[in-house]
Length: 319
Ligand SMILES: [Zn+2]
Image (cartoon, rainbow, N blue to C red; front, top):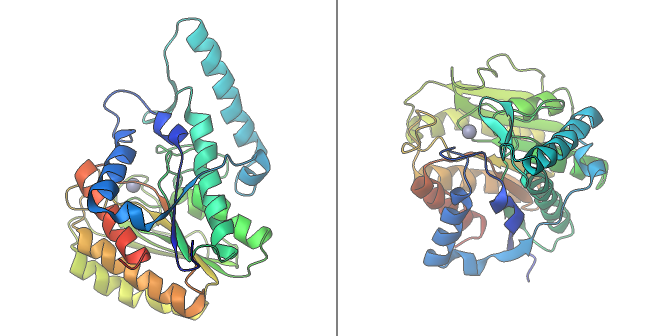
């Protein structure tokens, strides 16, 4: 273990959360990433760690207590339903449902982000990637939605601010969908700068009007390609990030802006994810001692997801 190592946090319980047959947010996503890291040898270069479960007090850093109680209530209701021979899932909205393992998986996912934050701030790791599900960036303070229950990145960012006493953290969201949940939780917090891009007029159809001065939202039209996006980010994200001088950077790392991903219509490829990661790493090295915690969000084409995560990790780990 060296101070410039890259951590890789995950947990077998994340693999047990599923939202039913044919759902794009499926356990095979984590398998595809694991396979790719194994085949390429990239996994050997990472400091692999088991994610601990987050405590309720951790989740309450970003969520209303009623929201947490409601999720726990659904967990109990589901247990009774299954015992009575009923369905194995409980629906929260049309595309978001819980099975018996969802609550535990969600606690492990947030726990991964918190533990990664602790290790990076302690200087055990330079940066870390959390291979976690459920994803988090659509989960609002009081509402689970869009495959998300707990906002992993918002919990970790608040953990860094409240418990480690950092005064400025940046949240960078490059998922194809707008991170409405993270915006809902962190808008108006002057200790946070959130920058994101997302496909315009796509789920959750928010973000065109930012909810706070600390939100830099960059909607991009469908079919935008990587080179055009890079130019746009150089003009928007990076001057704001440089001026903000973050002490730590959190990434909502969704890979569904890939051109092979059917959930969005953007045209990014692996090299674009490598470029974005490289530019973020430059900002982190200049202002934040290299400190980055990156959390998996979307990415539903299994091959494209695995190759893009590999590209992201190769840059984080200097491979
Ligand atoms: Zn997404």
